Amino acid sequence: MASKSSYEFYKDDIKKLPPLRAIADTLVLDHKIRTVSPAEAYELARRQWDVQETDLPIYAPAAERLGLPKGAKVLNNCHGKIVGRTAMARRFWHALNAPERKKVLGDLLEAVSDLQTRPLIKAHALIGLDKDLMIKATIVGHENDAVNVFNWLVNFTPYAELAEQYESSPKLPIQDIIVIADNEWRNNDPFYHNQGFPQLALVDVDANVIFNFGMRYFGERKKGTLTLAWTSGMRLGMAACHGGIKEIDFAGCKDDACKKLGKRSIAFFGLSGTGKSSHTNSSDNGGTMPEGFDKVVLHDDAFQIDIEEKICRVWEPTLFDKTDSRPIGHPDWEYIISVMNHGQIMVDGKNLPLGQDVRNGNGRALLDRALLGKYVNRCSFPSTLCWLTKDTTMPPIMRFTDVKLAVAMGASLMTKRNVAENVSEEELKKLVFVPFANPFRVYELWKDVEAFIKVFENGATGFMFNSSGFWKTSADELTGIPLQTSLTLQTAILTDQLEWEDWPLLAGSQIPTRESAEKLLPGFYDRYDHAKVENHEQYLATLRDRVEQRKAFLESSDLTEKPELLKELLESMNTAR
Image: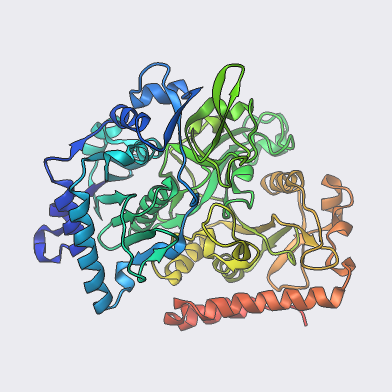
């Protein structure tokens, strides 16, 4: 399926063309703006003032796919003090009142006029790799921001790669996406977020347009584009997923019981640092998967669930990962295409990017999806959906028997901020609610709630993993939950090795029985038994308080527009007294 140009989408009543899209379209159509290929954007980026060329070769198959010169080297773009996303800079056109719109529109016209005084480039890409879900996108920026244009083309798919397939697809009732960027924008008006220089991410979801102003960080371009893609999928009746998903095929297993399991897809939803990529990308779940299984990964960060067709589809051909756990010599460096905010160091005469966040926090890299092993552009409907939380009152693993509770816990998912987000040290310490682990949702929460209810009603089972640690003596002094433990439990879920018993502290939830857990993880049941924690009364009070906070969060959301739905969610969260 293909998206529509502005004329195709609005031609029946051209006066419905939104002003922000008209501004973006007019800029895109300026004949003075030249269209660049990935190779041309790469060459411009090499000469950009804040970009350094390393001696690390770009992953050869990716370089060939992108049309880069043989032996092309990885580029390192360092941004300055802001090395993460800035939520406070976001302004949503649909949420502005009339005076605010008038003001922002005037400032936008001035900003675009100023942008046109500089040499500009543009590039075209396709968002989505499955033939039944593709959206054409265009990015415009100036030559001094070529590295972000290059990285955007790397992160998505250069239009020329799939042009024939795209052009032969039937049209979707969705507009093409337009991204306008100016990392040198300046505006001292206090209406806009300012951290020594102004930042603005102006989003018009109805028009499928975003303006990234005053922002160097590539993640703003990536997530801004994905925000519009996810929202487009939601407009088509699909569930938007900021998560990872893989499909396991047990048909080749030697064990007959495993062989009968067939194919199963499992999805993980969590913010950076919760284990989403670790759960999705692990080759064999720490050696716990049965011999003969086969695994394919759709993606570890973004996909869409087509509930009607019972299919999941991918948006991106690359991974945008932190490199804090990848030292020099780590095998993942073979798959690197581009890096951001890295130190550099000479090793045996070679100038190499230095990961592990030595220079600053949130060092990032674009990696080829080949890192995942086998990968696909579509996979089967998820049999299992897992929320990844940092709520220290929750057991390491929990299964939901109540669909409404599963959705309520996803809609009030608790986590902590991380260095991928541009927030204060104090904010990093706080627990926050991020519904379905998707901070990029720009439509009403109740739409996500309804979508995920349909996912569960169509056969998915809900689970929650605690990726932080379980209460030992307090909310901060914890019994650790090693990743290996979580991976072992994941395998147990996939292979039906666990039996379940009701967890008495939250109706509609279950934990593994002692007998089934001890077979896999000796000592597990007692180690994470809520009845054996110290300061038990304080533990129970904290658990109840956090559930009440969840309820309060849902009650403060737009779910109030759907009172019956809100009531069902609230009634599903019942704690022991």
